Length: 268
Image (cartoon, helix red, strand yellow):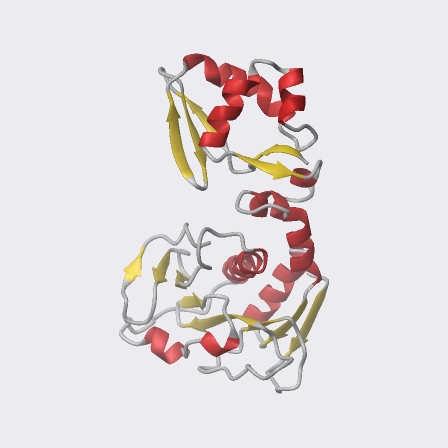
């Protein structure tokens, strides 16, 4: 297995050298020549060559590889995996074996519960993401089998923990002028929406245009992607996201009553 440049790696030249930036952070390199060398060496970091093969093709690559490894910009990679899809490139910036993880995400069995414009937008987002097995139902009857439940019914509480039921649940709900996304978590860990909304300002506004609901749906499916593929740092994201349906501004609730932080880029 060869060396692969992480999909999130970016290089920013400076007068003294460069910054190497990834999802893990940024590292400053004081070496003006290194930026020019990286431009050539990065073409070899496709997963086809191991360290010895890269050094044989470009002897000057040793300092470059050391700098990239120090900045956590390298990983073991399967040849061609980075080009599999945009999703695989994204997942690969966090974890290895991205193509296999994305395939598992796409081929899992999903149950989509809910009706109305948001449910329709989520169904479309599932198709765009390449999910191959999505069963749509108006509500949760209790006997369905799936690997993951996507609940957009808006019901306050969820009881979905019996053996054979979905191991994970992704939830979204609409309020006047707002959309809310819950963390993707085991059914037993879901929090009633009434507790999430306790202490928040009274909502006001419309239910969102079709275009706005497509954005909300895409963010919900991305949360599923990140949880199923483990594309995150440390523990899975645990925030409740509130989206303004007028301007799409978002705030993150860490936990009911724990306050807000902006924005939620680190989580989604």
